[in-house]
Image: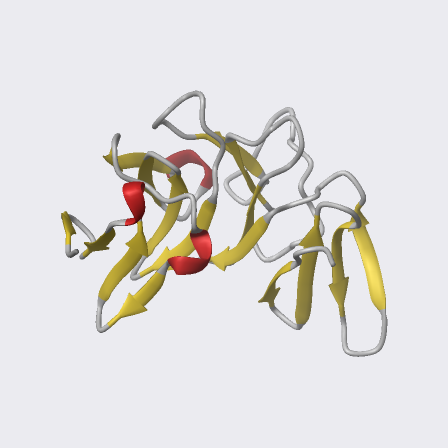
Length: 170
């Protein structure tokens, strides 16, 4: 009865929910990575795992070490490959509801705003807000339809995003 989010990185299948934390499966057994990383959404993007929804950090995107979904510890003197945590802009009183990939972007969303993360190295991760008024509280509605990202937005209107522009379609 608990919603579970999942993705793969390398030869491992990672999954998480708000009860059990982050685990991986290697085709023969399941291993607990972290009981405290209780993600509501995870995805793979540019060789890293990305996660949102950790209790008491609902506005932060967690980023794993490059090619290592088991390492989430922030280093004192980080390298380009080390884990990171990104706080994104948008409605500051709203939690992240969406984390997905679209084209070469990692897309994040809140009920009233959404944006994307650019970059592939720790030092050049950059967040950009595409809208401060349009977002989604319905992450299950987000779909890539023929090269545009469509989703159910505020007041249950449908929107589409082409990578640069957003427009209402209903």
